Amino acid sequence: MPYAAHPGHVNTTADEQVYRNAAEIMTDPVVKALTVQPADAKPAREPGQKDIIFSGSFEEVNDFFYEREWSEGLPIVPPTVEKVEQFLKFTTRSADEVLGILKPENRQATLWNIAVNGVMSGCRPEYMPVLIAIIEALCEPEFSHESLGHTPGTETLIILNGPIIKELNFNCAQGVMRPGFKANTSIGRFFRMYLRNVCGFLPHKTDKGCYGDNFRMVLAENEEYLAGVGWEPYSVDRGFSAGDNVITVASVTERTQAIEVGWPTAEGVLTNIENRMADNHMFIQFFFRGQHTKPLVIMTPLVVDSLVKEGYTKDAMKRHFYENAKLRLSNLSGRMVERFHKGIEEGNWPEQLGTSKDMSENCFVQMVACPEDIQVVVSGDPARDHVLICAQNGFIGFPISKKIELPSNWKELLEAAR
Image (cartoon, rainbow, N blue to C red; front, top):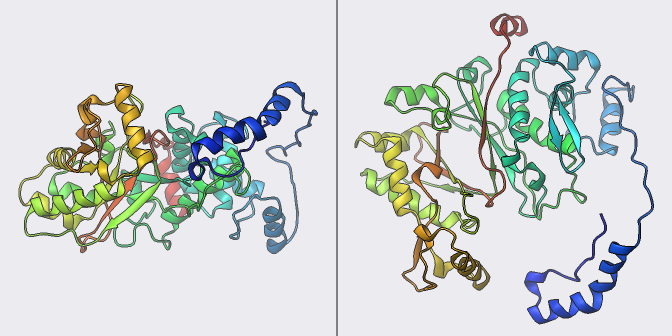
C-alpha cells in the first residue's frame, strides 16, 4: 500500500511544523499515491500442505528456516509430514478446516498449519486441542489480532483452566511464567510462532514493536487451591462451568509486579494492590463508548488467604478494586490530559470522567467501567505475597475465551502418548 512519510515523529515535533511538513513535503507523495497505478506484483507461491520444501540435516533444516524468517532464531523441530499427522490424531476435525483469515498476510488459519507450528515449537501431539482453541480465540474479531504488530509491542497472555492442567502437566505454582515446564513453555512459543508464520508479523517489516517482548509462558490457574477456599476459577468468571477446559487469550502491554503486598488486614492488602494498579494502568481507555479496558490481576494463594480469612469473596474484592483503584489525572502529560478532555467533549464515560474539565490535584477517575471488567487469576508461588498487574492497550486484545474440544477417545490417546 502506498504511503507518505512524515519526517520525524509527530509527537516530538511542534504542531506548526507538522502542518508545514504536510503541505511542503508530504503533499506530492500523497497525490502520486492516489493517482499513479503501482506496477503489478505477482505474489510468491506458497508451498502446499504436504509439499516437501527441504531435505537435510537438523542443522541444515534450521538454517533453511531461519534464512526464510520461518523461525525466531531458536532451534525448531523440523515439521515432517509424519510429525504433523501425529498432532492431527488428537482431533476429529479435518486438517483442511479453515478457522479464519489472518492479517496482515491474509492467510487461512487451518488445523494443518496449527499442527505444523506446534511441531516446530516443540509442543507434544497431545497439546493439539489446546492449540486449536487458542487459534479459534485469535480469529475472533474482538481480539483485533491485526493490531498485534503495533509499536507498544503488546504480547498475548494465554490463561488455562480445567482438568487438562493436570492431565498435560502444566505448572501453576512457583515460577509459573518461567521457562522450564514443557507445556507452559512450548505452547507459549507456539502462539508467537503462529503470529510470525501464519499471520505474518515479522520484525522490521510488519511487526513494528518499539521494544517488543518475548513470548509468554501459558498461565495455568491453581484450581486445586481455589476449590479449597471456595472461590470459582477464572473460567467461571468468563461464563463457563467449573470443570470445563478453557483457554483465554488477552493482550498485555504493560506488566508490573507488586512485591510484598501482605498486610495484617485485608484492607491493607487491597490498598497496596490498588496503589500499584493506578501506577501501572496508563493505557486507560475512556474514549470509545462500549469498549472497556480489562486489567488483569494475578494473585498468589498467600494473598488470597489474607482476604478469605476476613470473609472476602472474589466479587467483593473486585468491587473494592473498582471503587478504590483510581488514577490521578494531574499525573498525566499535557497530551494525555487533552485526550481526556476529548473524551469528556464526546460524552464518553460520564459516570467515570464526569462532565467537568477540572484536572486539579484532587481529580481522580476510576480505571474501569464496572467491577466485572477486572480480571483475577490465582497462580504463582503459594508461599509469596506478590501480585502481577497487567494492563491492556485500549481496544487491542480484549480477553477471548474458548472451550477446549477434546476427542471422545481422549483418555485412550493420552495414555498411549505417555
